[in-house]
Amino acid sequence: MKEFRYERPADADAAVALLTDAPGAAYLGGGTNLVDLMKLGVAAPDLLVDVSRLPFEEVTETDGGGLSIGAAVRNSTLASRGIVRERYPIVSEALLSGAPAQLRNAATVGGNLLQRTRCLYFQDVGKPCNKRQPGSGCPAREGVHRDLAILGASEHCVATNPSDLAVALAALDAMVHLVSAAGPRSLPLTELHRLPGDEPHRDTVLRHGELITAVELPPPVPDGRSAYRKARDRASFAFALASVAAVLQVRGGLVHHVRIAFGALAARPWRARVAEEALLGQPATEEAFGQAIDRELAAARPLRDNGYKVPLARRLAVSVLADLAAPEHGGPR
Amino acid sequence: MGAMTAVTLHINGERFSRELDNRTTLLDLLREHAHLSGAKKGCDHGQCGACTVLLDGRRVNACLLLAVSMDGTDVTTIEGLSDGNALHPLQQAFLDHDAFQCGFCTPGQICSAVAAIAEARAGWPSVVTAQDEPEGPVELTAPEVRERMSGNLCRCGAYVNIVSAVREVAR
Image 1 (cartoon, each protein chain N blue to C red):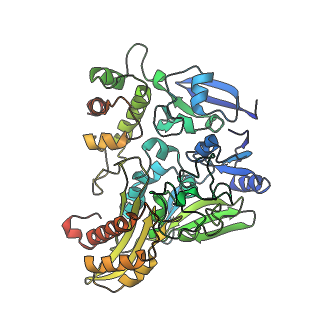
Image 2 (image 1 turned 135 degrees about the vertical axis):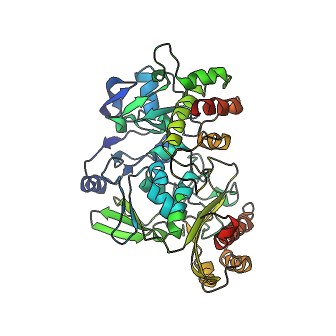
Image 3 (image 1 turned 90 degrees about the vertical axis):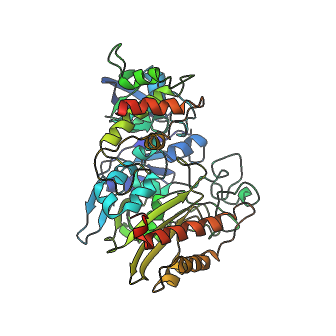
């Protein structure tokens, strides 16, 4: 591991100032991804600014009936909160379906959103990778890419975003609150992560030194039901091959409100806006769900070994939506 | 030597203070500086759980935490669980249920199980807990134990007996 200096500032302004003046610096949250990447030589910051104890540790109701989640809240704390389980169960489900308890106890909300791809080439400094070393190439396109992207990838990068939480937040229309030397700003979660294009080394739209302070959820959709479902190679402690978060509100048999987000298919949580638009006002039937998802997944461009993700994502989404439309059949809340 | 930082924490109730290279992990602090070799270095990447310890009562992988960020914390390792020669109930249960073979993962398994039982008693759900389960203590059924202990790998494959040991103490 490369040497680094360590600072633990008392407030966000000091943290931002430290990072802004140091191009090689990085924020340290729970460290569950960053420290690992430092051991692998993938990340080599010369200064770590520890933000894990900044006063962003509260989960509070907002005046508008939503929920504000501090960026330093640990994943396990958020997943077990009564108000989260009751009003935003997909947040709890998504968090609990990722990592084991040891990692969830350390990992922060802000860090979860900024974790890097688990693409094998990105994590192996002996291999080329455009995300790790721009211009070095992408062996994944012809190599091992079974886990990698089928949507929104580019010739330069086919990495996927590994977060489960981000998928649930995308379906909930969450906002991300940021602070930088230029002051505070807010973004929809769906605009935080970038598609690779020709700059795959930029995972997000954050500027250097910009710090996530909170995630804000709007009030729950009245009578809306939601679920998160994840397919993976083993039943626990594995990243998704595909996952879906959905929120559905049906009135008089018709889709009145629907949000669908896919995980593990792209470099960012993939909001299925084409499918959402197609479903609005349509009968809440499996047939309609299937047709809408097919329209969304028509944009998929699978590689040699990840074409299975298309039918997998379709089945996940249709089964989740069908369960949500038929609560009397014992589906999830 | 690289950049150093002074760190003070409590390990198994005793104060420990040291100037450490910033690159030192909590696991290396425990094993190399505090000479507590119970927590094991298995994968050193947060994938096996052999280094599991309790940080302010919560289970964590010591290999992924930087010692410099642990200032002021309370750490409990496997060495801190027994009361002299009186074993912790989970240590005894692992013996009674033959819940290990080589023993390398055992300190991490036991620390993890101590926290898993506390989490279930505190009503923390797991992904296999029914969504409509009322709040309150969660019963540690076999599927619950398997899910909640999934961060601790055992290459000998003693899982069946580990599940029985944890369930006995959870009752």
